[in-house]
Length: 210
Image (cartoon, rainbow, N blue to C red; front, side, top):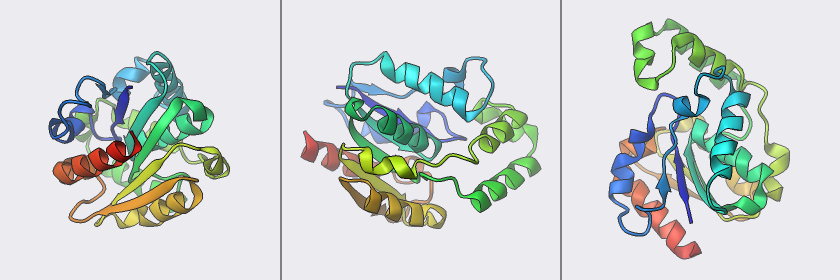
């Protein structure tokens, strides 16, 4: 059964390397880490185009899927699970939102506008692409779909990630089969900040559900 690890904006698939290295055996052969820039493959850098490409990627894999996403990757995973409830075996959301917070997006966009073009090279996007992508997410709201997602879910939030703490608690309360885990010492990028702790949390979660 495939395990999908979907990175966040500003990351690449390599952001999962340290976590996956600590999860040998069962997950190694079945792990898939799609690159979000590569999924777009020349399409406009907006959320709808990215989700369509992600959905097509998922559809080409054996179903059901274990979905694990951080930030933007978590949003993509959440939407896929909401639209294809029988195709999601489990759901792990790390530092993810289900309803886009306007103030947080505005601050993020303001920061991006001040950053030089060279700072975006590691993302694989041009600066204008990143601004367009974040702007296209402003109206996303999956709140009404949460109660219809039946698969077990693990909601993870870094202990230092104050911006996403409330959303993590709300996701845990509104998904039918969810539990919350805070990983102390981690900020928003839990897969980069504390890969060993994340690998342990994922292993325990999936072992309990298999």
